[in-house]
Image (cartoon, rainbow, N blue to C red; front, side, top):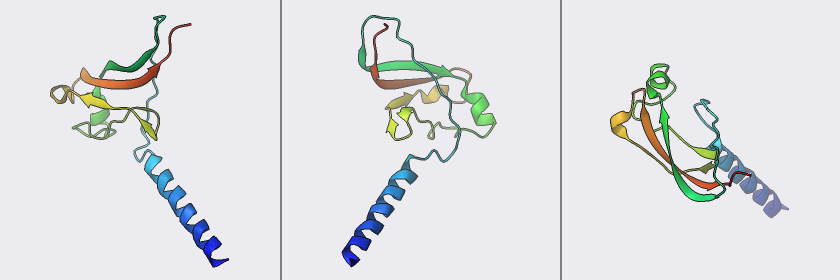
Length: 106
């Protein structure tokens, strides 16, 4: 019985730890959709995004170096991305995001 309780507690701690890693600590989320107008599906497609990071940084919603920027299909399925650091804190911040799967236009 003690082993069952110990296993239950360890499982609960592991689930709590996993959940804590997935929660967005900043609570600043912007949803966007990538539309594919092609009949071709893409895998690991790199997409360039232009954002106005000046406004987010000015409001205290983003770190000045962009280290808190995340992209993903959910908070636990993050996508690789690269930021052109010379464009941070400008109205045309360039970020390249690797999107794992973009379905073909139907």
